[in-house]
Image (cartoon, rainbow, N blue to C red; front, side, top):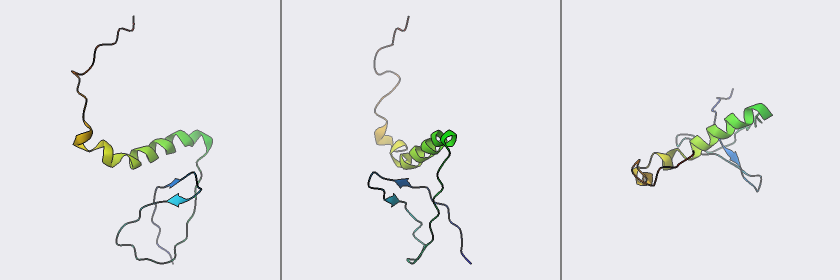
Length: 77
């Protein structure tokens, strides 16, 4: 009997799979099943991956370097 734990990850340009697992997970063998999104689902999968990967950076107040008062209005007429 195996317990299921879903992890989001990324396959890099070297064709290596990377994912961070919970700290309470003991070292040992695991079975990995790769689900490849359909072409129509690829955009959604990409968005979820980006939001997961960038979550820490986007929630960091040090990244809030721009305000509504910065810059000049864009004249699009």
